Length: 601
Image (cartoon, rainbow, N blue to C red; front, side, top):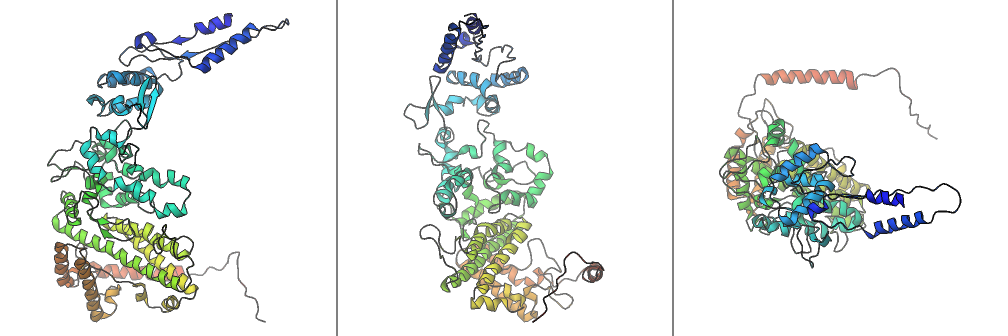
């Protein structure tokens, strides 16, 4: 029995008297000890030497956080003294209620990083301790008995609303709160094309910001606020938004990084240190350039902060069609009121004329997408009627022309909306040139050509007729918008039409008569958008002013600078070098492949 006695003497229960905690040894441990005792008592009769049995059981009950910590060397899970000292300093400043004392003491050992994050948070000195968020009643859906304490395993948005009622109400009316319902539960992508298990760690992981909880509340606050830390700096960090706003279908973090806003912000390391600033009414944010929350949530010189991200957004540009936002989200505001809120953010850094012109051009590009998508659907309809497309859609699950997966043109049309079309619209409105151009309109045009080429290959007469001519104007398949000149200022060459220089864009290919027809068509289309309520009265007035002054806006009334001829000569030199050393240079030795056609007959 000596080995057993030795083992029992090594059973250490630390701090139990100080904590007033009863240590309950589990049934499994008792069975193990009993079995080992029985094995020792039944020693074999043979003269073989006895086998020593040693039991080492260590039960650690941590001391209270405000008591001196003994040397924990060699105890599993113990934190280094240096870390413990730092944590004690933090916890000394925290307001911890009696019900949470045990939580902090134990989790300081078992999950110390979690305790440290909370101790550093603004919750800690305000008394928002463990049980303030994790308390539960026995009949609660997430009730869990934890060391004789009733604990809630899943604090919900409803729990956060106990203290943050205004923020919860704002969030509840935002599009964020609808993401689980609209884009996961009813999504035709998910309901047709994906294994459900994948969706749980795919779409739902981000769209879970709109989580529908059993207690009736909606929202996952820690989608933006880090668990236990709950720091404003983390919520304002663009990378936090980038967890869900990235990728080929909504690359907002990449768009921001490419934009002038992102470049200016990231170029100054001090901006990152200011993310946790305290908002003061009437003062702008302290950054050199905005982050996501600066535009969509934070207080401005003239507006208070909001958790309703839709209250400053005048467009729906993630949907198959570009539409003005409705009163359904955004606190019942009209799109004009939301645009006014959006403009107030811009005016903290930009002048009114620049803001108005930029938004006019961005709005028309968002509407231009509709015409491209409409044209793609027209070709799909023609192929459907001709029997080239075999599946017109999935009734009740995936509507024709919006989503289809078994015919190449349907898949391409889906990407026109869900990938390229979103990148084009978001790039245009968020000041990201590459996403407007190469990841946007260029890919949209390629998609449209791919759809038409498929029709031609399968005998659609109009598609065959479209492929045949070498007329470059055939790529303008749809109605178009345009604004004279550019928001970036009058450029005397980019859009110039005149005897000394004429750009080769479509508007200038047919002389003055073609130029007049081009602008007449653009004017008529913009006027139609205004009549449909898609542009404001102020935007229509600005457009008419620019239209009447289009010769000046195009730069054609100004002389070209002397450097024009210098650069023109330089380009001619480069062109000659390309012809001589590129297409014109033939090397004497060939490669490993040489094609020899079979002789006829």
